[in-house]
Length: 332
Image 1 (cartoon, rainbow, N blue to C red):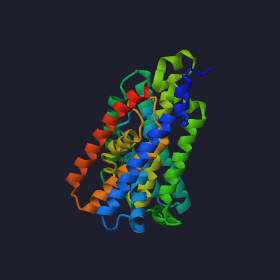
Image 2 (cartoon, one colour):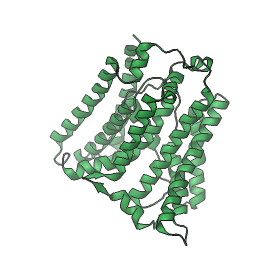
Image 3 (cartoon, helix red, strand yellow):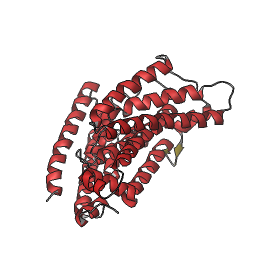
């Protein structure tokens, strides 16, 4: 038995309500305006090479933001994804450099190791947070330090490199001018969209974010749904680690610093409420594009790294303020 859900809220969750369409359209218009602005004020923004760079640069943040969407929809947050990504990359880097094995076996082993490391960290986050009903902010802050320390310990604080050529080639491959790693992220977005919009599991995640007690009284195991959301977030961190390794051909224990903030920003800019229960994966996709386009355009304009950080911070604050008013509008 599913929890009782208001029909208007159900239509909104499935992406067919007028308000949801208007919300997504507004984010899309903001992205278009940003693209037009940088097209006018920079010389090479719309060049094929730069567009390819943008798609490549937003890939990791898009992947992390997909997992973050699941967690934020249930009213949680995961501050550890950057560190978990680094830990998964180091574990995979150790696996892929084992001597005496063929390239194919090494790549399969590395991918499996990264995914398992990511899921394990996500499960710990979910189990501890859900079992003791503790704020996920605190638990994942602890995991941030645990995963970062583990990455430094496993790698002996050294960068790992010398990967199989096929693995390196995948990171730079193009398909019809589109980076293959971006297509991987896009497939992940489509899978997440299907889960959130066409499965009972996805519907219950929205229900937990809206009214956790109602879902529990309806007889659903809220505990395990919460754990699953964090496990998915950890899984995407593992996938991001693989993409990171393929792109840069290294595994660094200091990778991913601050990545959790960009992922959260993409989700919030995309219209997902910090209080949970409202949002969409398509909005997250658009939010990741806005973050990527903004970063790329500011570089082309010639702003230094300090100014870019300040402007990105202002955009995040504005997004949170807009989320506040959007919540009021959606509650009418």
